[in-house]
Length: 365
Ligand code: GN1
Ligand code: MG
Image 1 (spheres, rainbow, N blue to C red):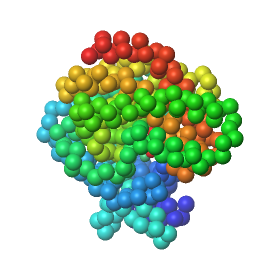
Image 2 (image 1 turned 180 degrees about the horizontal axis):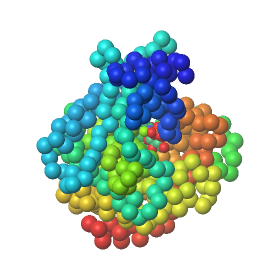
Image 3 (image 1 turned 135 degrees about the vertical axis):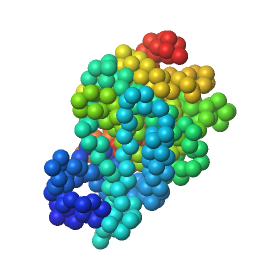
């Protein structure tokens, strides 16, 4: 705690730090909520960046600054908000004007403003909330649609490139002890049946059917902030993976997290279900902002995106489990296997409701 207060105090602010608490459920960085001594109890987010995952943390700071400064300028001059407000999490500087602080043991720390008077949820509670989740992602894409993707650095090479995850999985599998539990066998069979299809989005990109844009990279439900009093979406946080990519990665990620009421950490993996009513509402909310810039091809690949990102996350968890949990934080050695099972069940549920999902996409496009 003393070290946390010490680090928190390195960042520029007028008030004294009175409390630092662990915050959120991130699986990569260590995240803390800092409370300042002020009447309103102002806060900011303090994070120790996982530099095993993000090898060049200066680049994530650079990307964040480019994106947040661009959006702030845009929000001052545009009418995009249409009577609603939208907030951007800002990079807070250290006392000596830097966007990060390196402590005595080499840890990389950064501070981000907290979106006050808002909250995030682990699961969607209503159809109205699902629309807000979709709206938030649409707002994000729409704010960044004219910023050239080439302006941002690639902070995590191969992120959401399912083919690269498959290649790595096969390398890990080749080294793994062949003795398998029934759950492992189910997962391995699951992946092998889908590996030919897994290149669907990358192929479409290479063929020029889908184009790179600026994406969030991790727009899961608990990264979307809702105003405490109105319930309206007001921000998307966690901008580490903002970079060039396909909007399909984001749409798939938002839906795989938003349409699974049991949550990705459930132990009841066999009961996991993809809720199509929530899917419809999220997509409607998304399109209320995004329909102006989506192409016919974009719509054609929506179903694949929904199926693929759930599958891909399962594959990433499974690989990490086989590799000894080197990427995602895990409290026990089987946790990443369980997380993989949840995503694979979700993928199966998406597949078994393919007709209903295609109908939704046809009706809302
Ligand atoms: C990781 O750390 P967190 O929870 O924000 C991961 C995402 C996954 C997510 C699953 C950089 O995000 O891709 O979808 O876990 N982030 C990275 O909860 O790999
Ligand atoms: Mg994240």
